[in-house]
Image 1 (cartoon, rainbow, N blue to C red):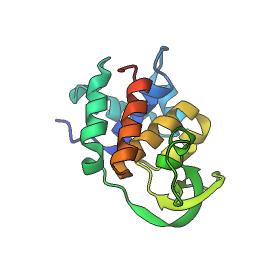
Image 2 (tube, rainbow, N blue to C red; image 1 turned 90 degrees about the vertical axis):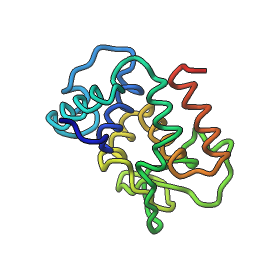
Image 3 (tube, rainbow, N blue to C red; image 1 turned 45 degrees about the vertical axis):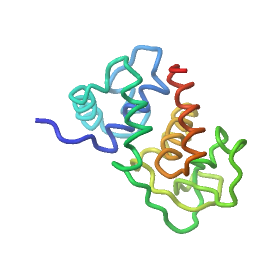
Length: 166
């Protein structure tokens, strides 16, 4: 029997849709890309399959992100920190959204200062630094988790473009 969708499950799906989208992949590729164990990836893939999110229908992923991610994985903000820009602070949205409060995933390898946002999973900041497409998708997910109506609308539009739904 499968459990509910865990943060790593959604993180694995985001990695598959952004980095490995158009090429063959193995569990080892996903594990190495995210910096997690192969057994964790295996378990995530089983849950994604059971949740009917693993197939080619990106609309399911879009619906989950746009309508539920903020409620299922509410954002946890912390004190100012050095880290990796996310949400409206990622370059994808930073050009259209002006804010005095930068948002970052705390990480020693980051080069930005801002309000700390706990990433969906601890592997996200390091993996995002290695994979720009993954970084962008996870930042959009955070904009959907954290943003107000305008940020959410812009993130949804960009998400549709990334998933080739528009």
